[in-house]
Image 1 (cartoon, rainbow, N blue to C red):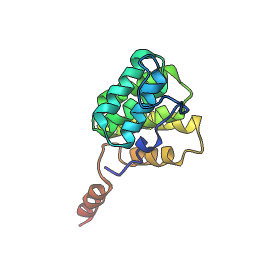
Image 2 (cartoon, one colour; image 1 turned 60 degrees about the horizontal axis):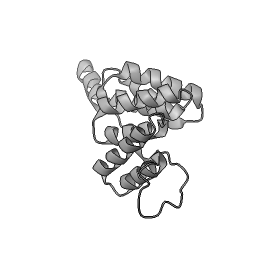
Image 3 (spheres, helix red, strand yellow; image 1 turned 90 degrees about the horizontal axis):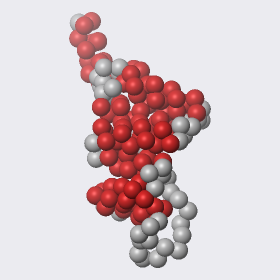
Length: 160
């Protein structure tokens, strides 16, 4: 399968606060920011825990669903990633990034038809997002999830 541009590097953040070295146990934003810091330091399990706590404290925290979905996607847990991106989209239906991220998760699962629909929506919402065009193109060119090399080799073999 051709490479996709991954969105893990574009985590959403809430503005920094003077939260100090300890998390405020009642502040979803505090756990959200700590989750982002955990991602930055490659502490995946802590990131999932902190994003989950942010969601527990604020079930309508769309960006927390998005970022936890990105972590799940990065870990290869595309089913849980899609579930989180579904929540993000339900809460924030005009956020192109949510469709783009879910499209990447669908693509990783080999469900290119759904990936194309999400990349199309991402492009409709943000026509300047070159990565959505690129990943949509890969899904269209490889609807069965075949790698470009394999397809080329197959076509060469047919002509011999």
